[in-house]
Amino acid sequence: MLRSDAFAKDFLSKTIEERRAIAANYRQRSGEATSLKADGIMDVNQKTVAETMRENGVLRLIHGHTHRPGFHDFTLDGKAAQRVVLSEWHENYGAALRQTGSDILSYPIELAP
Image (tube, rainbow, N blue to C red; front, side):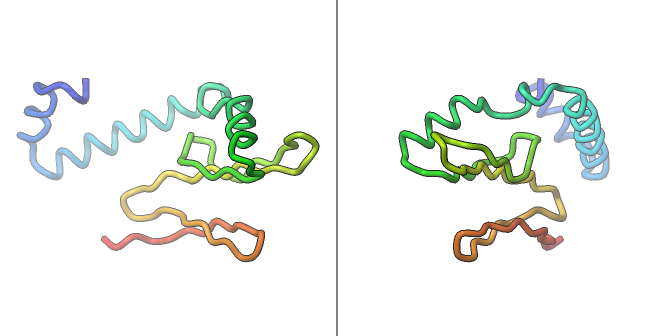
């Protein structure tokens, strides 16, 4: 629906205030729907993660958000492994990663208005 020409034409004919209100409503509804879904639907397939990490010879994988941001520790072939899921960015804030030695930390950042 959102990609249809008719929707785009109608949406763009509205004022910026109306468009922001519509977008906020869609974000809220999406968040409510997301919170009710099983983790398996909203996250990556662990078997695929393990295969990808093996193929690339790594023990840490960082990837874009899957509605389950955070640090996910697990064992891969008897070794400690980690999957880092980036959080989503919003209009005024997001998060960044910083690596210090072998440690990775996530910290919030405020985006310019």
